[in-house]
Image 1: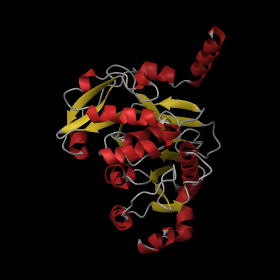
Image 2 (image 1 turned 180 degrees about the horizontal axis):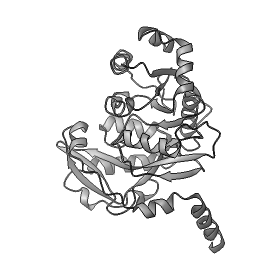
Image 3 (image 1 turned 90 degrees about the horizontal axis):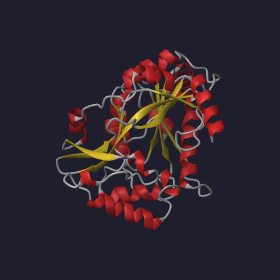
Amino acid sequence: MEANYALSLGKIGVKKKNQMTKSAIIKTGFCVAYDWYLLRYSLPRVYEHSDIICLAIDKNRKSWAGQKYDFDDDAFFRFVEQIDTDKKIILYEDDFALPTLNSRQNCNRHRMLIAEKMGQGGWHIQVDADEYFLNFAGFVKHLKKLNPCPTGKEKPLNVSCPFIPLIKKSQNGYLYVNYGKKLSEMIPMATNCPDYQRARQNGHFNHYTNFYVIHETWSRGEEELLYKINNWGHASEELEEKQKRISYFNLWKALDEYNYQYLHNFHPAKPKIWPDLAYCEGKNIEEFLKNFSIPKFPLSNFQLFLKNNRNIARLKHLFTKLLG
């Protein structure tokens, strides 16, 4: 499929792809699955400022938990052909749902194989289909300021972004996590050394940025959300128990734009990660993104400098161990 696609979009060929991989600095990968249609919102936001993009989908159309899903191949390939005007997309199909691994392990392996496909060196960025950068150009500029051309042999570094999760769509808008003056959940979005141990998390140093990402995580239809919580990487961790998944799903079903204000600390694994909810109008995700006001980042420039200093972080870690 990958080779056929390459030929149909301008005869890219293996040699050209190898050249693209070696010369690329900004390498953006996507784990593609049943919710590929959300790429219509996430992919255009990163396309212009990525040097190479890898869309990786299970060749058997199975989830990380090994469940088959419906997939409109024709619509997907038409979308890719339409958006890939600069011929920078590599389609990668493989077996990403090994029965000997659980959903989290398959997730990690999927991400590592994407990194291998794009080759060593450069900044490796991984974006899920339901994640929408609000300022990807600024994020890329920041990465190149940190290191204009990583070789892959530097000291490992993750670059993290604050996430705003969307929890539910109502008729006229969206419920999203409101962090107030607290720091949002920070997710490693880029790295100079791909090492995906728990999705994009690992033990490497995390450099914090203020480039927000909207995450349409729980904002799905009932049937799709139920499928997601039974098959995503987290299913083998915080939502491992079936009864817990059902209970949390029922709580979500009861939410609306009137009662959301009464729900606090409701993240399924670590409740305080999602402290409160807020509401923003938008009949679709594009309207929401236009109406959404980017929060003021809670850390000052000086606080961010301290947070991103390896030596200070090391001393803080030593003091914590001594006091603990």
